[in-house]
Image 1 (tube, helix red, strand yellow):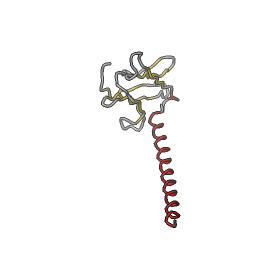
Image 2 (cartoon, rainbow, N blue to C red):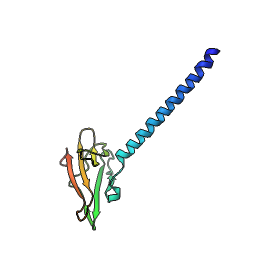
Image 3 (cartoon, one colour):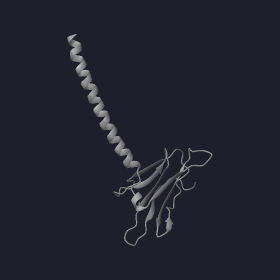
Image 4 (cartoon, helix red, strand yellow):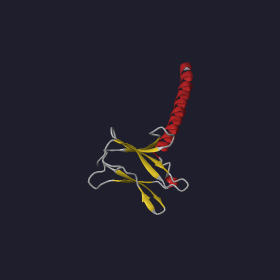
Length: 134
């Protein structure tokens, strides 16, 4: 009986410690996930819309644009033709700014977005396009 009195509190403390560590890991993961998948340029007018065809939803695409002085500015890259792609916002080219990365298992399409500054309109720069048609 004495052994049960010692083991039970140790077991409860171990479970509590595991729950605390799991909660901290989940909160950190959730923040990193949200940071990776949230449009950082939304306040600069960058719009990203997902689209799927009626035949299959395993090949979705995204439309990317920004409106500047009533003109729709789009990148010169087609964000489609990838099977089960993921959309990320991460520093792809190492310049300290988050880039738009659309990729599946082996194909990457990445662009940099530069919001308007002073009198310069916003612009896009293609960083990588593994698939030039489609």
